Length: 613
Ligand code: M6R
Image (cartoon, rainbow, N blue to C red; front, side, top):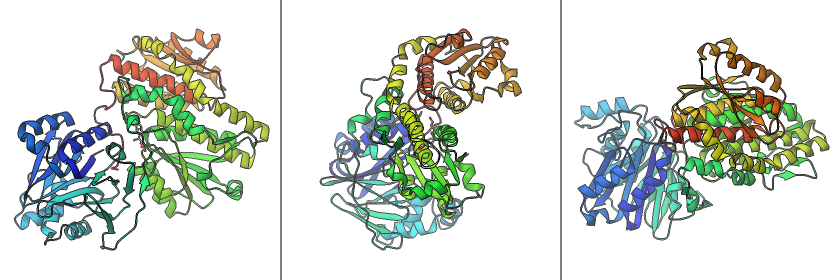
């Protein structure tokens, strides 16, 4: 959602801040701003829209010397929550004295009474934001020690924050703190970079410190001193980022989304490599932290997540029940956290999140831990809050996913869930032979996906027949039902075509009323159990004039007969074929959106990581 960058060191602060904001652009935002120290004053530049607008506006408003001033600054990209995306609502915000500047991610829930109280003692506010209220509160608390002022102010607020604060009265330092909104500090050589996301740091250093909730740090060019909000020192280890700066570039592709779709043979290889044990017909996922006894006594698997991660969980549900003979259920994380779920120590809760920062999924993790469940996570971002708070789980190793529409994270999530199901299955009911066969199917996934990607040009041609549609329906059965949901989500989020995913049997219970001549039905009709029934449902749609695009198994002439158009994927086990099938739908959505001229990597209104409820 919003993004924070702070810099203190030997380089030109404005350029570092703008480059850092650019690295955060993928997260989605609607305005941007920055503040630097200029002697005894704070200079601010803000703009609605893109970081490029902010850069141009700053160049026009500031002298070249100021634009290249070595020193200290903070910057922000905003995803509007309180007040529209205008210049005045953009961060940084100043306190009443205009000496203190603040950038903030999160939501201050009790900002209204604080604002009223401050207005009562003469404060004047320009914006509609909760952040400006926090800036004024810090200023009000400042009695000559910025660190203490920030602590005192944060003691008075309810809600979530990741913040960076600078003051013209105390140059040479930035105060940063977090509760519920990530802050990572890059420790460079004579420079320190603060960010809400490591992608803004990789160009400077690989050495980082992650703040935990209620940590507050005094950052200078050469030091990072971390305490808690009661001023008690805390120790946080320096970690290695392990992200290649080049991985955050488009590498010759027109969009990050297309690049990430093409990366999937490699990202899947990274997820699977070294995690299959062919001798045991099982998987090696030490991070799950389970003993043979845990597996034998396991009562239930509960998978929680949001959006695409939720859809991966739905595939996992089929896998756990089929392979491991264990009751599995999937729940939208926001619902789970408020439903007072029944959980015990023999229930595995698996939190699925690419970013590891999604607010609802994090809250679900905390609820499950509170209830004594065996909680683990499946995250892509190393060191993310969910990964750290669960303390056990499996990383996807998919590399940075920049496109807002998730692609390679989904396929890696499914691959890891299949390996988890294999491990549980071998601990419970699968024979060595069965385990071995399934392990071999999983091992083949990267190659299967490579064969689908080779069809990209053909899928681009097919997209020409569909890109002007206003509505589309995606249908599937069994493990292909969540693939239908994911295909519909991909199409709607990047092309803005209204798309719905349904169980193939469900159309006739209502949605079929919407079919007209030419309405696209994208049918997951691979040669897996249930195919015949799906073909019957396709007939019902054809009879009403729908145009059918099938995802079928290579060489399945019977299924091809039912389709106006089709994309063929290689034959594999039903669970495994969800992965090549979804890759075909990712390519379809991409090419449709491209033909419609959409802003594919940053669709309107969306953010990469949803850190508010
Ligand atoms: O980072 P997470 O996996 O927790 O994110 C969950 C959803 O916000 C995310 O999958 C979202 O639905 C994507 N835009 C889908 O492409």
